[in-house]
Length: 476
Image 1 (tube, rainbow, N blue to C red):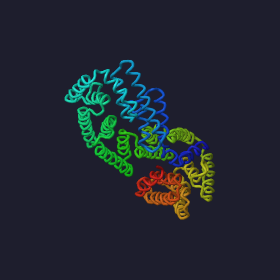
Image 2 (tube, helix red, strand yellow):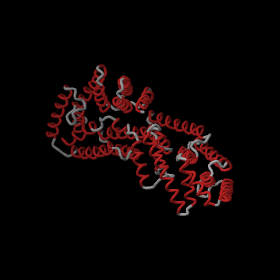
Image 3 (cartoon, rainbow, N blue to C red):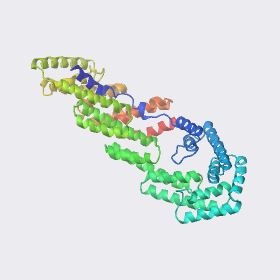
Image 4 (cartoon, helix red, strand yellow):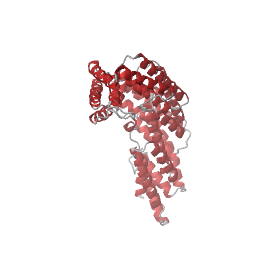
């Protein structure tokens, strides 16, 4: 019996940790810098998959363009690219040297370092005749629709020309036309909802010309499409359509890392875990396993998921132990002890804590032992109104964590009570009000906890979106 009580208590006790502990990941800037430096040391200077030093440092710069260590890292990458071009030219690999020189220009390496290399490279490829030949090949590839999918496609060839003669108008115009075509494709992809394809096209354009005139307009279209999908995910989540919400957030993430969408998936996974815990407490093990399966698909590394799986296993074992045959007298004796302990916990207003000896734990154990017993039913009828009063009393005293405990007890006792919706909204709004006051005083850590509590209690609370934006701005 003790195993069953402890396991059931663990269902509620393990997961009352602040959601902010895992909802708000640390800034990625330092990780990007560390990864970029590792790539730089390994000579992995640029890569289409985003794992090259250049791409990692540029991702860090996008998050904080004013940091001097990021600018220094990009300058070091430019120098490494120049040194690579020198080695390639010395080895007679003119095509590789041309690509490296183009990359050095994109990284804004000093002209004093680039120009001598460009002159040597132009001489090596055959002077003006070699450049004209490259232009002809680029124009032919462009006419065939081979824009940037291979080394002999239009864009790479135009880049080779511009690495040798950065002011070559024919190459500049040709590159601009190709990039405009790619941006048109990106716009169409965003319009039809293919966010991953649109993002990939934008990245390809930025690699060649981050200052392209049409780029801001297409980025605006892309951002609008991303925001629309995020909002759809939030609406679906608020209405309980968790799978549709997950699909929307995953589509946003397919276009690139997005903190809001990532948090959306984490909230969905958390909701699935909480549902699994509720089902576990009611011994509905198959449904609990299904909820945990959905949570695992969204957040496989979540620590609360692992703990919930352990709770499910232990509760199932405890249930089996409680169902073991025993004498009627023994069952009656155990029931009397549990009901007495329930009365004592109720008098102390220990609704859910401490684990194993709270009123709820004693009630659930008694209910599992004798669900039809009149004394058990009377206990349920008595402690439910008490849990409601407990919530009201703690809200009046602004004791929000204690109020949350009372709300959880109420929900555990009567999960389908229609009055719970309004109660959750009141508590979520109170968390936001207190969090707003503390945020005004500069306490961002508490503000994050308050936001996380509100999102966990009632994610559909209208004030969450505005407060979330305030917190994000304060953390920048």
